[in-house]
Image 1 (cartoon, one colour):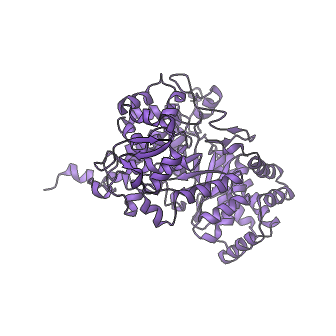
Image 2 (tube, one colour):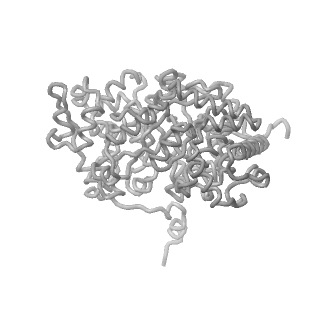
Image 3 (cartoon, one colour):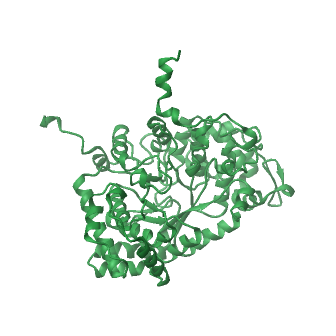
Length: 553
């Protein structure tokens, strides 16, 4: 006879997830792997001759790159000789300021950083994230995609996402040749929603760079690095090639960050028997060494791997903390879906939601998940109310604000009309009034009329051949009467010339003032310090559309 209790339990969503026991020999272990190297560093005449138990003669290209460019050698031997528990205490001690710790944490080796965070509980790591985050003000980022690569829907969803508070927005494609249209649509839509939103189009690296150089995107993120040499080689890459790509973006005033995450190496079959966290620590040190201002990490698209093993979700928070310890902007993932359990997905996010990171999600889906072309997100458009109510429940700024239906409808309609006019002025395929009306009220692509894909793809290719730029977009918007949107697009281009948003963790407000770790550094040292929700902001956050006045009852 079967237990009725276990019949009920077996039917729960959490039991639709996959779980495995640890297998350290192939890297299926989240952290504290038995094969992870012990921290060490030796420096002779300014050169690293030993790194994490390995002499220079045995360095692979990752070791060489990290040893040459990624560690603050001035204090390296001192810090790596310190007790890891003592360093962990300092990280979560509110009486030890961030300014004291950064010279120490940037002098650690990859193995030392992994060992230090392994001494900390999840709660202690959250305390450290609160204190160590680069930019004082937390923010959020979203995905704006759809199954059909429909530019009208992308523009409308981007505008709504901006209205709801996202500081950055990212699109990608179902069909590669749609990239120019998707980049154009998210650019226009986001600036309709709120001037100053940064947008990107995640595609193949050469195309992505080309779109950025032409002013059709404002930042880049999907520049991936890995924790073993074999995975790098599998992708025909090296740390030096990634550093060169980073410098290409910087040379044109474009913000960019690298991407990495626990589980990628074991998923590729090249973990070399090391734990996921140690390998991710190497990735973060490569990011620092390459000169990138930040990273998107937190397992990202590999989240199903660490989520299947013991303490995998803890390891994701730990890798976020290591990035923050290296003084990098941290876009802390919370994007790809990994569980059938609502309880589990919320628990995974609270570890970044509560302390706040530079971008709590690096991919909250602004569409229903069936339209998310990044393989589905941990949060989507159907969770908007849950997110803002969680903010209200906990008095936390999670980067979003409540929105009412009439404002959302108005901004979606304006965005759809703006992209309609832009397409017309640029000589692109017609966007009909029927499409504009559908996008105004749509939930997802199932609510949109189909477009002529062959005609769109031909025009997108022609658009690239004509070398249409962001300036052409601004002119088109102005000619069509969308002067405020035109000005916002032009302001994005001007800020690239200034270069101010290359600073660590930089975002813009609606007046294009930079908010970064340089002019708004995190100075948390305990209660009533660091980022505090102002009375004005709290009034916005607590005013949700569902709340009724008791006096009116």
